[in-house]
Amino acid sequence: MKLFKEQEIKKARIELIPMIDTMFFLLVFFIFVTLSMVHQKGLNVKLPRSSQGSTVKLHNFVVTLKKDGSIFLNKERTTLQSLPLLLKQRVTNKRDIIIINGDRKVYLKRVVKTIDIIKKDGFLRVSIAVSPFK
Image (cartoon, rainbow, N blue to C red; front, top):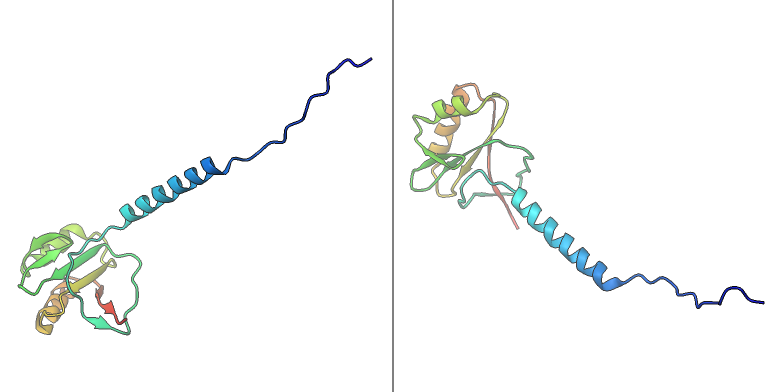
């Protein structure tokens, strides 16, 4: 005498289509999050090229020198005379890296004068942004 009816045992299946949809959603999400994390502090200028440039991981302040003579601290317009005052207000640590982001058409005299003004106030780490050769 049989008490239980034999039932057909179904194997479990993993559905691939919903998993692929979820993976594409996560991929797009992480791409957008990563792109929004990149924060450029300086303005876009045509940088001079160098084969010996190195990457700076962290920098807090960018001084941009444009070819028309304008000067910016991060993205705020300033003058060469008021640059030291702005740096003193914004920079809390004198060891923070200050990047000179100069257009390739800017005269060397302006770059050197800007570096002199920055270093005269005791800021120790000044670098010049360059674009690598391809």
